[in-house]
Image (tube, rainbow, N blue to C red; front, top):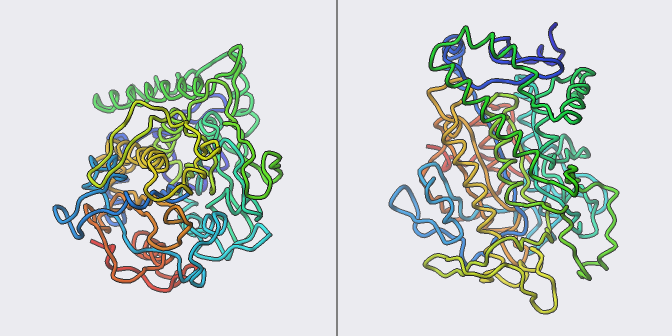
Length: 496
């Protein structure tokens, strides 16, 4: 029986989806069935898009890259060190900002700078409202019907950070379907894994068979692979020798990922403890106004943020690798994050680079418990602030590494990094909320369109919305989109 969502996507067939009771597992690229798709995509290669957001800006004294232009003309900064192995894929932007959007306001609040990062519009002072859809949702409206999920929203947030007196949605969602509909991120790896592998009903919710299968897996500790075993055996007989190896490796990776997801947040007595994403009804009893009175790390026993981040990177890669979606937004934390990154080892920074010291990032400063927000406001040359930045950059580097090693699902001659446009940035510059000189790194050529191994230094500030407009028009061919947010012109300097 044809599943309801399959009518949205012609490329889904028995040959690239394994099925069992209530479970559907999309497969990666297989050469046995690739020829018709390759011929089709040669003229119009498939593109993918991911935006990775991090809060609170950077310790800006350690951020700017040196030099400009291509290849040997520039070198990466101390805070960009985790990205050095992937320099060939990168384009660093200097002098892109949102100054015009805020009428010259030198330092808007965290909440003012979060959602507008992807909408290019000013948010309402009290309501869950921005000026229009975010760039990912403009893409989803145009290309989302080609995949089971028109877009995905993921993240790592595990505590409710203060929303600066505005509606919390402004701080907790960078993805907006329209001016008043925030799309909240999924932070629970198990829930995201289940969503990626189960059959979907027409409304996007699981059908009864999928619900029954999920419950059975939970009750009996059954792998998703057990449900598709028979279909996988049948498919193996039809594959080439190299494809049988590919399928076996993919199934092993799914098994490994499923095991890691189960282990990421163990609770007492072996019971799973899920990470709850912040909601609009969250209360802030631990704070008075903007003053931090006391903060708990607010994580379940055994939780590890680094493990959480790596598993989410695996799931994001899986979603692209199996062509379940082509549009993803990922929030490494909410705006004005007060999360305690005390699992990190302190690093010391200088103009020449950085090094790790044998000390945890947990020493009190001026009577405050060192949450990320408190570290931010200790200045742009603060090693504690820079240490958290360094870790956030390393998680983006980890995602690039996966994309550089994972074949495109529709053309195995290319890697995901070749067909994906990746954007990594914060909504503010550094310790004082500046909206100019935003820390931005682009990765991937978007199908050969964007410069790589390049430091783009603009003579005057380029509106961030113009970068988004360039992506929409050039990378994805949406030439009918002539403006976006406060952006009215493309940025040809970004293009190869």
